[in-house]
Image (cartoon, rainbow, N blue to C red; front, side, top):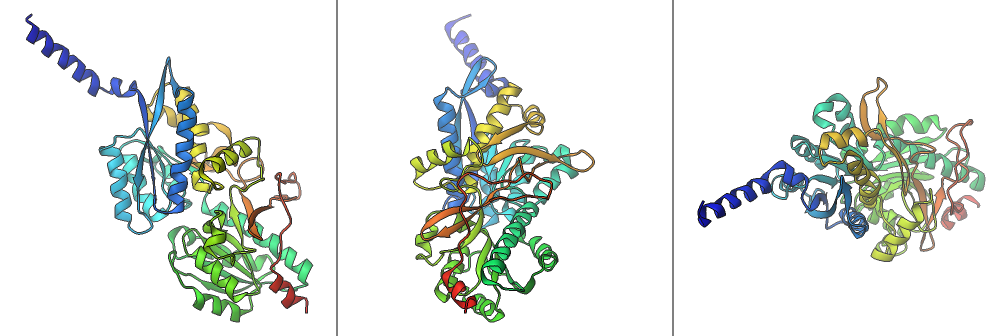
Amino acid sequence: MNKLGKGMLIFVVVFLFAVSPWAVAFGQEIKIGIIGPMKFVQGIGHWNGATMAADEINAKGGIQIGKKKMKIKLVQADSNEFLNVTDATNAMERLMTQDKVDFVLGGFRTEAVLPMQDIAMDHKKIFIGCGAAHPELCERVAKNYNTYKYFFRGTPFNSTFLVRTAFIHLGTVAAVLKQSLNIPKIKVAIVMEKALWADPMIPAAEATIPKMGMEIAGIWRPSPVATDVTAELSAIQRSEANIIFEIFSSSVGIPFARQAGELKIPAFQVGINVEAQKEGFWQATQGMGNYVMTSNTYARGVEANELTKPFVDGYIKRFGEVPTYTADTYAAIVYGLAPSIEQAGTLDSDKIVSILEDRVYKVPSGTVKYMKTADGKPLHDLTWGPGFLTGLATQWQDGKIEGVWPNKWKATPEAPEVTYKGMVPIKLPPWMIEKYKK
């Protein structure tokens, strides 16, 4: 065979090797797509957590697959999902077809994550959701396992559990108000952003709050991106509510807290305000967000287990702030995906799925165990409760985010008492004390 013929043969062999599934599986990098609203704090959290995870794993040589170690390469995709669902689906499609990622993490707004989920499932790629809370994302797994088995929830626990936890926080605040201010009948204003993930919480709140011995003062549904909520706040003030039970995942949480503080409405804000989870909230509200209490995942000085402090301290050192829950892309990679890949010894999605859905493992916010339905079908949703994931409640107290729950909390009379390291008592706004102590 002449030199030209030999050269062509070598070229063909190399080309076939390069494009074969075997070559892809044993390439030098594992490509993980990180998709989220990258111009907003939620997407920034996605990217920061994943970056921290990839750097940590790569510094140790990568993920062990058989006798080979493969490093992680992150691919960022801006979903722009707050503003345009089509942008989100296009971003996911690019990750699948152009970037050819092996796995995907992220997503925030349920309305965008549902179609993004479909795209990832069509390509049989494991997609770990790290932001959207609607139960339907995991209910799809149980209803049509063969299609949706590649989806897992990484954070937060679903909106059913989120609202259950928020009700516990609401009840905790109500008990403090009754004891400290001697308010016999608590009136609650329900304020939830107009978004799909919050929709199931309205009937839940309407059914539950009266059973807790409280009266509903009214229901308000501002836009997730509203910049002026004085009309809603004025109506709430006229309702003489003692508590504002708020559910905000988007930017409306900033003007609501700022304007409520400016008006000094004598009602305690508790519930979910994602913007209040980040340390920039104090400056963004010009200090008017003082005393806002929100469900949260992390806070300085609060430890759910031995993994919490190293993660939170490392994140603060690197990024200058406490991680929001979307930064749990870190936990999804370091404690979820990477060990499952190593155990499977392959990048084959089906083999990794069968391992990931049966593992029980610690993460910085608690312990992950994936749920099953009552008849034993995989659900790929997160288990909530003592010993697993409970989340925190934090409160802004004079410029600092303090952990205030769980603090001597018992899920049932028979359950063990739960208190995480670093908890402090809830503080009431002084203008509330002034009004009700007269």
